[in-house]
Image (cartoon, rainbow, N blue to C red; front, top):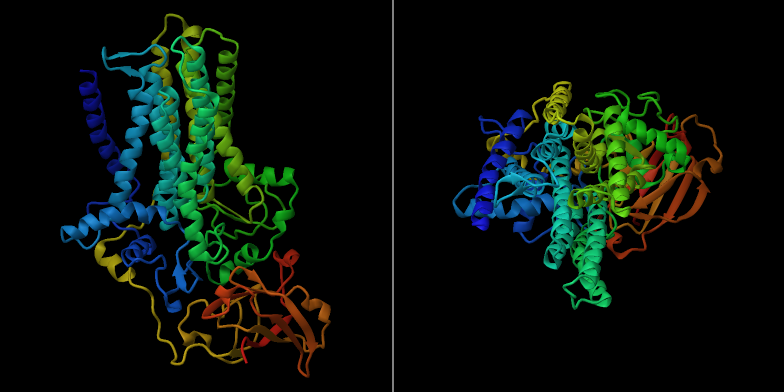
Length: 632
C-alpha cells in the first residue's frame, strides 16, 4: 500500500516536473512553438558526432577552428566539457534509430531539468509527507517544503542565465546549476535514510560533475564530506544502540574509502580525457582557446601572467564580493574599465556583466541561512528540544553550502576574469543557504505568533511575491535557439580555402597569413606593417626553434633590456630563450624548440607575449615584427 502510493506520488510529480521544465524554458525563450529547439552553438552537437566517430576531437583540420575553440593534440577541441554531450549521446542514438537526424538539444535540457525538479520535490515534499496517512509530518510542514521547492526551482539568477544570449555558456551553466541541486538532494537523502548503497551511488554520481563543468568538482567534494560524516555517525550509533551492529570502525573506514574511490572514477575519466585532449590532466582547455583581437589581453593573462594574481587578499575579496552582490545588471562597455561597481579593485582585471545575478538582499539571505544552520547544529549538540531530522537536514545543507562557497571563493578570488556567468557557479551554494534560512524562519513563526498559523501562509506568499518581483526586474531576451534547418549547416566544420603545400617554415612582413585558411593565425600582428598587440597567436608546423626578427617603431637602435619581457609558448610549454642578438636592422630573439614530444611534430599553436605584465592596462608595443621562423 505504501509503495503503491509512493509510486503514484512520483509519477504524478514527474508529470508536473515536465510541465514545469517546458514552461520555464518557454518563459525564458529557450524553446518555442516555431521549432527553435536547438542550441545556436554547434559545439556540443559536434562533440556528440565525434563520440559517434570514436573520437574526442571535433576535427583534425586546423581550418575548422572557430571562436573559443582550441587546437591541441592534433585536433580541434571544445572547452565546455564532455558531460553535456555524454548526456545528449543516448538521445541522439535513439533518435537515429527512428530515422530522426538529431535529437533537439533543448529537449535534452528539458528532460534533465525535469529529473532535477523531481528530485527536489521528492526531497523537500516527498520526505515531508507520511504516505500512510497523508498528513504533514512533525519535523517539517507543507508550507516549509513548498517554499524550499520554490527557492530551488524558480531561482531568479538561474532564470537570467537561462535566457542570457550567451549560447553554450548559458546551457552549460544551466546543467551545472541543476546538477548542483541534485547533489544537495542526494546528500539529504543519504543522511535521512543512511544506506551504504545510496552513499556509494552518491559518490559515483558526484565524481562525474567535473565533466560538465570544473567547478562541480568543488560541489562533489562538498557533497561527499557531509555524507561521509553522516554515515560514520550512523554506524557509530548502530554499534552503541540496542541492535548491536556487527560493523566495526575499520569496516566503516573501508566503506568510506570505497566511496572515495567511486568518486575518483569520474574524476579519473576527466583527468584522462583532459590529458588526451589538452596534454595535461589538470588543463580544461582555457589556456589554449582562441579569441579575436578584442580579447588578446585575456589570452595574454591566461597564458602568461596577470597583475591580479598578486592582489592582496582583502582587496581581492572586496572585488569578488562586489562582483557577486553589487555589480550592475548590465555593463557591456569596457570590461577593463575602473569603477564598474562599488568595491572594485583598481588592479587590472576583466569584469563583464551581461545579465543580472545577485543583489545585496541575497547576501543577507545567504548569511541568514548559515546562521540558522549554526543554530540547528548548536541545538543538536546541546540536545535541546528540536526536531532532529529537520535540524540534521539544515546542518547538512549549511555544511554543503559553506564548503562549496569557500571552494568557489578560493577558485575565483584571484582569477584573471569575472563575469555574470561565472557568478552563476555560486547559485547552488546560495540556494541551499537560502532554503535553510527559509526553513528556520518558518519554524520560528509559531513560537512568536501563537494562535496565528496563517502567518506562515503569509510568509510563503511574501517569499513567492519577492521571487516574482525579482523576476520582473530582469530582462528575458530571446535565448537565440534555432531550428534544425539553421543548425545543420553550422554543425559542419568551418573549412576555408588553403594554399597547397601546407604551412611554410617562416612568416615574413607583407605576407597574407589568411591565405593559409586557419582562423586566428596572425592575431595580434599586422604583417602588412609589422605592428603588434599585447599578444600574438601564430600557427607553425613541426617547430625546431622560434626566431623573431624585430625593429623599433621609432627607428632607434633600442635597448636589448626592453626585449626581456617577450616570452613565447607552444601549447602549454613555455619556451626557453636562447639568445638576444643585434642585427643590421634590429634585433633577433631566438627561443629553443619545444621539449615535449607532442609539440615537436605537426601543426602547433604559438603564443607570444610582447609586453610586460604590469603594462596590460595601457600598453604600447615599442617593437615591430618583421619575420618569424621556426624551421630551417
